[in-house]
Image (cartoon, rainbow, N blue to C red):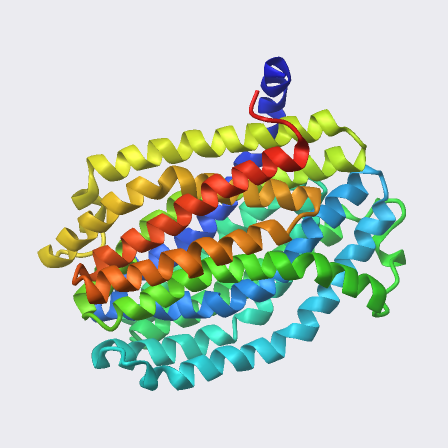
Length: 445
């Protein structure tokens, strides 16, 4: 088994590396937004972070539904059913179209309700218009997710990486123009950052669609032969598989959105420190998250070709890569927390609180990586229910209530909130690795 793991390392890494770059590129867009509004003050940093988290608490559910494409496309491709891959892409596009408008309405409703949340007035004044603009990026995100899952399911990952790099460049330039009013553009402040995000996400979709059209020109059977009609039985199958994945993703992102809202009730400085540390933790998490996507594809391909040993090797290798990186990330957080915080703000009070939060983040890095990768490889098996249930238990039954108690009852402030979240991540990480071992009947070699 040890030799089998070594044989799995190269193909896993070659698939995971471009996906990881794409995931890092994805979260970098949010970090760039935070960095570029930083000179506007702590309220701007907190507003961008709060609005982004609330947006993703809704958007991640819709994008999570499309995670069902991972095992369906990967297993069809592993069985050499290209026609079925094409049909799953069409089904993913139908699902994206059907859920876009209702969820845009949901984000707009969240934005309209913000005044009732008890958020600091200076943060609220900036967060509400930012979130309203972000709502209209949701249809583009869903199309992007469908195109990406289709390409990744067939092992085509480099175009996704290029799309994210391209989008980051556009977002950076548009931020510079619209936040501060360069070259005659209006100085829109925080709203300019939201418009930059809208433009970059729309261009990502155009880019990936062009890639698919170009790649499929000589495919047999051609993509154009795939039926375009809405197929309800296939759509129901996609939703049945994607719904628990959507629930798991929503529970995980939602708990951090709830924590962000709670931090917003403390002060603009506490919220800014929370957002800075959260950006750092989100950035490191993108590596195991990318490895999880690669692991889901490798596991799905092995399932499709009926190779149980290949399933086991792919899963354990993905877990090893994720654990190794997150251990290194924890060491970085412990060794230079004030340097990392100082990149976002010169406010010494915010930097000091951010350093304390990065210490907590260092504690949960390994477990966060394990739960992220385990979620992906279980998805490759077609199991999206187990991660959802453990996320519910770890984050919402344990983590958030404990964090609330430590923050507001024990008086530990935002640091107490993070210790509660850490406890939930530790539970999820341990439980999902055990679930993987039980599902494959293969304890760690």
